[in-house]
Length: 289
Image (cartoon, rainbow, N blue to C red):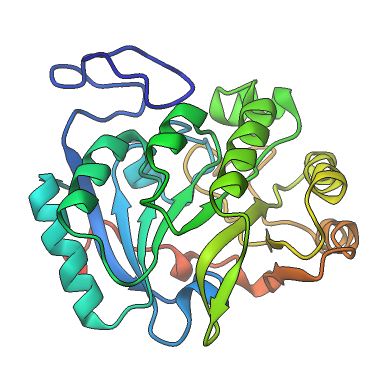
């Protein structure tokens, strides 16, 4: 079957060839860990049960997880193996099962969740460049959507992620996520159901940020959860040139001002832009929980 899971619809036979996402047909996992650095209502005190998959349908130039998003490192899992892994994570005491950049494995994740659906929330942590059809197939399986809303500037989206249509695609994807999870449910300080929209401030691109926040201000109820991230750290193909720096205080200040109407905004401290917050994907430890 030719792959049409993401908006690129590269139509590759991923049983025999790599898709645009740099992935074949299995579920390739590069890291499983207790993640303490998500939003407080995701990580809580016990951490999020993060499952980092290999490959990505955006493959951003600046990705902090460049090592896994642009390659196929890791181990292949069958749906049965993934179901067992979710059960182990749940038993470890984490607050949720957190699939990170996994839409290109949606079919396998659905099969795994048909085998075992955890009693804790299932989080879908995504770059925001998603097919509405694929999201509809995930309905009933995903409790919390955690999408990025990266770009309002199509030229920047083209340069950074080869996705000039990102803004329009992400808007429709996020609408679908809200349709599936219209009500945010927080119990004991942990999100059980709902949506959190993330945006990463990119250096020199404050107009891009303002385009995203203006759209959210006009189209998303102000009691919904958003997360403004200042953690940009030069990596990948952005270790030199225009994007080889962290954001400036003035960029941070302007971005903060643009979300002041939102009641439930998570705001990263500028100190979040540190290499030590980036998981080590090459330390020989597949499991860290």
